Length: 250
Image 1 (tube, rainbow, N blue to C red):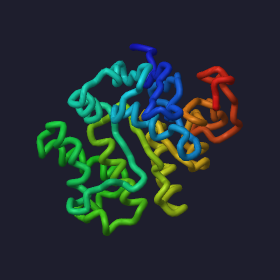
Image 2: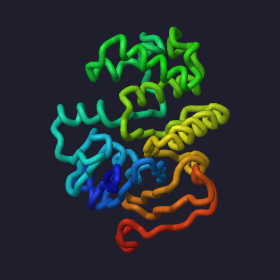
Image 3: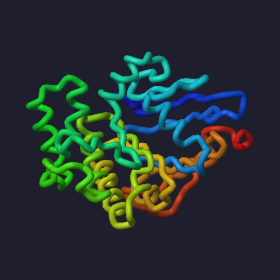
Image 4: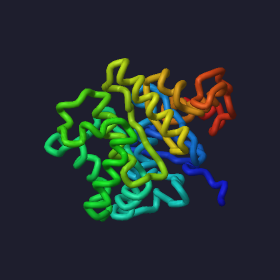
């Protein structure tokens, strides 16, 4: 058994043009089974960080390692294989396919990974049941509420048993009741051992679900805060050492 972190970024920088970097020398790690929330204003580098971890983009310099894989060194085919095998992704606007039923939407990742249709159908039905939406298996996404659609998206993200779950503003398009439902769902998943990194503007979501909150300012880590006091994280915040020198924060 290894003590290596699930996610390990070392001096990761991303530049898109001659302007300021979108991500500026970020060094951070996330342990297996941890839930970490990434906060920051628009343009702070949150989405860039998530894209580097997901292998959707590459750093201009530095390294990105996830579950022992140097994600920054993968080619296009390798990145796609890595995402299918190791990463589940949840999006703000669900990204479900409206012309497929709920069951078929959930099955898509497994079919792309080469799982047989029978096995994929059984796995999808199991997930829909565990998430309390199995009665909607034959429905189409547009017939569901926002909270129900996000549960379908979570089931799809978990289809291939990913080591890592990435959530990009998972409550951003939901009403307060549905957002609370998704908060409880993410907390339950993390309590079951799922490693989660979520990007959010929802301070309540971060406090309720995350062990740590990392705040980005101008592409650099401004704060790395341990949320102590409960299993989910809500409680007195304890500031842990910055991953970069304080003077380097913009």
